[in-house]
Length: 312
Image (cartoon, rainbow, N blue to C red; front, side, top):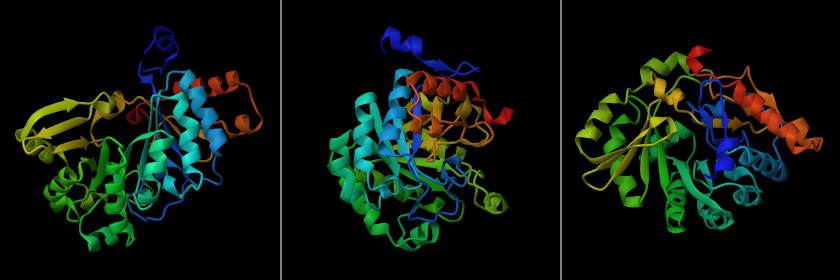
């Protein structure tokens, strides 16, 4: 990063740099996973246009946010998804996406050409019936085809996101590790959090503490790499598999090393996944044609509202 760019980088009041933007493109989804946190959004009524998203990212980039992840809902339900990626890519170092993969076979190559560099694909089970139970969808084969298309077109890395649920899919972890290796992907094991409204009543019965899994992974690793983002660990196993573990529960490092600011699908800057009482609206500024300085001010205000969620 150049000196001038470093000087413009935003820091919150807890000294955390903010260099990573996560943009929700839609709340629509063709899955109905019961544990989905919907990026912490509630009752979004409209969606930003591709042009508006591109302008927001341009402003964010000028403030040092050089990495953008596109999320949903399901981002590939946006018919203008290739245009969105094209509008973002010139302004940042990396564009990535989280998707359920059902439409990825159709879009992967065009997205890669437009500037998408890596992708996270949700895959919570390799058993078709269990997959249907979790997602309320029969799209298991489509997801597998999407994974293959993502790897073949050159998206790298391809990560498979698995929310681990006790008694539902935790027994599939070894098989998922092997499947990921065979696909040329990285498996990302994610700890279940009770942050989506309605999950609390059954969270205790489904919560699976990943510490035991990490102990096993560590014992079987040739190398362990700690990623800068939220100090996540990647385990390079003796058989050539790579597994990453995301443990937000009871993990203060998850917040301490967060460098992310979010944009909701209806045009609000969201300082924290866990909160909806500190949002900063930018939709009106965009549609009024406000100057860049006004949008920069909105970003700075959102960053100033960032707090570790346990302090809320």
